[in-house]
Amino acid sequence: MLSFKNLGSGSTGNATLVQARGVRTLTLLVDCGLTQKELAARLAVAGLTNEDIDAVFVTHEHGDHMGCARQFSRRHGVPVWMSQGTYEGCGAPDFGELLRTARDGEVIDLGEMQIMPFTVPHDAREPLQLSCTDGARKLGILTDLGHATAHVLAHLANCHGLLLECNHDTDLLAQSSYPASLKRRVGGQYGHLSNASAAQIASAIKHPKLLHLVAAHLSVQNNRPELALQAMSDALDGSTEIAAADASTGSRWITL
Image (cartoon, rainbow, N blue to C red):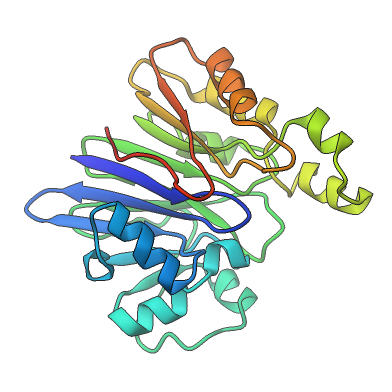
């Protein structure tokens, strides 16, 4: 059985739990973009402690995703997977023997769960997003990219659940107080997904067994939950349950 819960998604910090229950329960933390204190507090709300985390996967080196990954790993003896580029991009910190290298298209076997990293177009050194499966169900996690390539869409095929970036509404971004350079970065091919771009992805990969979609990484200034949810609803056929992750509370536990 595969379940997931976002702990918080946005520019202030990103973290998502993925659990596979087989012979034992395995818990993966995808991104660690919080302080250690805040992470512990949000894990407690999720019914977990630091000691319940079996592995960490960091998608890229930006602070709202890397966060306390090194400190958490060293303190609790938890292995951390990231690309070589991500490791170099965050300054090659000392993880001791706990660092693992993730590569595009190479399965990471955690026993009860298998992870498949894949490259995405984003303004980071070697960003990876991922899918997770327990053999029966598949979850796609896709945040922090400027556009979807054929490679991205192929890796999201046949997902039963999807955490999908809906960063901004194009009109709100254009009207925002962001400087022009930042607007170009956010809305560019290596920035972040607009609601419309995310809707195109949802439409491209939808199938009858896509049961849950959580809109993620919403900009507080340049988006509204209702706009993201409407875009997702328009893209899907009504059989998918749609929700939006909050920056401070994330989402509920969802079982696929």
